[in-house]
Amino acid sequence: MTIDPDRHYRTAQRLFDLDPQRDSEAARRLAKALQNANVVDPETLRATFTDQTVTVLGPVPGGAESVDPAKPVIAAGSAVQQALSAGIQPALIVTDLDGSKTAHTMFSRIGVTTAIHAHADNIHRFESLLPELEGPVFGTCQTPPPEDTPVPMHRFGGFTDGDRACFLAAHLGAQRLQLSGWNFEEPVRGGQEKATKLDLAQRLLEDIPIPISFIEPDEPEAKSLEDLDIGEGIGLEFEGR
Image 1 (cartoon, rainbow, N blue to C red):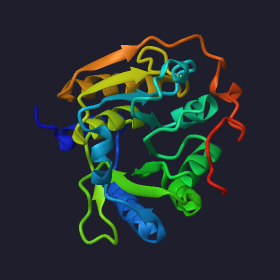
Image 2: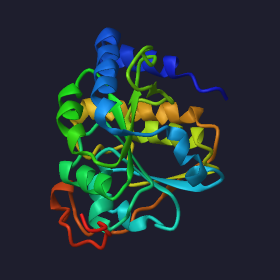
Image 3: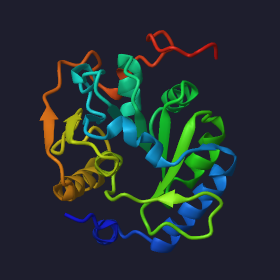
Image 4: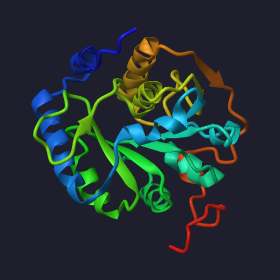
């Protein structure tokens, strides 16, 4: 099946009354903000994901405890907190930067690539946090990537951090996806709007051309995101920084 990001965006636009002009402007602003960052081509990750079973970690407490760290892991959105607390170093973070600032900066410091997403409501976040991300980054957007930007923007399909992570993994050659820390029925936060976004994500995932399975989470060590320990003493190597 051919992935159609335009159809994904049109569907989201109808559901959430999105403004394409504002989203496009956000993409341009992110491209400008990336000029002084350590920008990489997403294709540099292809060797990591090709023919692999990739775990996409979501924010539900307990998901990180179920992850096999020997397999490539993508932390989607606020799941960076889960990964950091569990001592799991993801191969990639896919985010619009509404997760833990501490987790984002610490993972970036040790060289984890961050795919930063631009949309109309997060310009303030990426413009303020991006200068603190030392590691490799690239930009993604939900409208067609604008031309003539200082650095290229990318679009792989999907809408929320989680389903965008899945489409990105599939694009980079993953053989199978495992979803851990996902719950389409009960959002961790966000009320009815988040529930609608999760319903959309579930529908969009039907376009993924590779098998998807769910990992039953272990009993979480923390009962909520706020309970997670994201201190430095978790076993990650910071190489003298």
